[in-house]
Structures are given as structure tokens and as C-alpha cells.
Image (tube, rainbow, N blue to C red):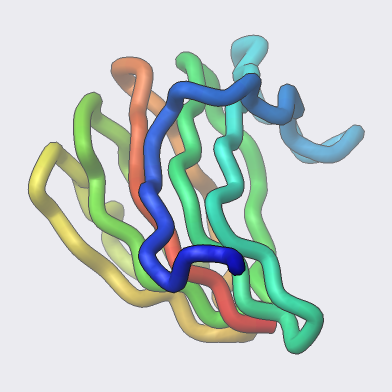
Length: 114
């Protein structure tokens, strides 16, 4: 029987990725993602990490995240930039558009609902 208690860690091999083509503003940001949970009804949870760079973002999903390490700047279109540091927690709502800039390699935990 599968345990109902699931560890969220980086002991497994991560998924490797990067911003979608045409979204990079500068740098060569590379992503590593450790999905701990992925359900058929669109719930995802795990750990995400990115190297330095800046790219355009557009969210169709709802996301809660907390930075574990690093520093990033998240800027919503038409709003002031927000600096994110370890310990900061945020919710991004569907429809958010702007930029994500990683100043120092950033790692976060996340819960996403499609």
C-alpha cells in the first residue's frame, strides 16, 4: 500500500528545463524540477530551481511558493518589482503576466493547481 506521507526532497533525478522559446530576456536560465506530487486533477507540488537569467512569464495556473534559497525579482506588468529572498512566500493567481529575474540561483517549494 502506498504511503499517504510523501517526502518532498531533491534525492531523485530532477526534470531539466528552461523558459519557453522566445521568452528569455537575458542570460541562459536553466531549471531543475523535482515533482513530488502530480495528480490527475491538476495538482502539482515539489521543488524548483533556476540559474541566473530573466524571462517573460504568463500564468494560467494558481501557485503558492516559498523561496528556500537565492534571490529573484518578480515583476507584474504595470507594477513595481518585488524582490524575493529565502523565507518569502507568495501566491501567484491565474492571469499574472510579467517577468521573473533570477539574481542568484533560486530554489523554491511550490504547490500548483491548474
